[in-house]
Image 1: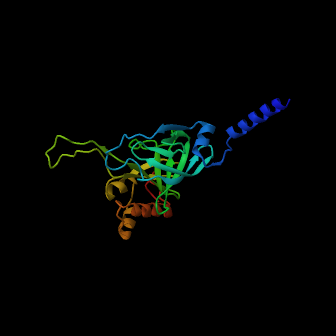
Image 2: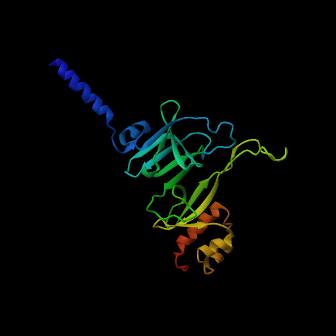
Image 3: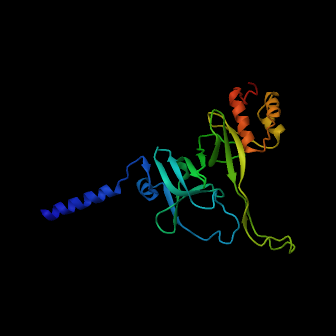
Length: 246
């Protein structure tokens, strides 16, 4: 009888250990165990000898992941692989990284060395993105009414061994992070803001109102801070770029 009670107690303990309470989770390995939404792969040296990095930050940083089901994963070491458009987490198990399946993520936040927050939003299959854009993670640069999103990108440049000695590049390299900017209206449809001031105003169907404000404020739409100012102006005057009139 005592043996039977011990066996029942043993399996009760195991069952309790296997359960993970939904909500705020602090261990990605436990969250993976609970919902099987993480892929695990070992560290590898695929980019050894390559200059630059495919990642947003050179070092692991703390962050938060918000899943579609409302669960969140906080305070973990993570990074954003810009080249592969993947969020990666550092597993507590030696020499392993964890990759959340993209379709289960709503958003994530990364913090740089100065504790500045970088918020990324995951576009879903039923949300409209421009033909020139792609599904994936977009940085939320400004978030109020009409929003400003940025798509990070890094190019991988292969070594060139055939050029002249003084022009040949004998190493592979990830080029510096660049961004494409998108105006996002409240129903999450995207309009890319590209080119010079004239082309951006044309895409916004400007009747001269925005051009006047841009000139008065001396905005340079090549600068992210000035693009944010433009979005604030659009929100303040109630602009609707679909109609091209305030």
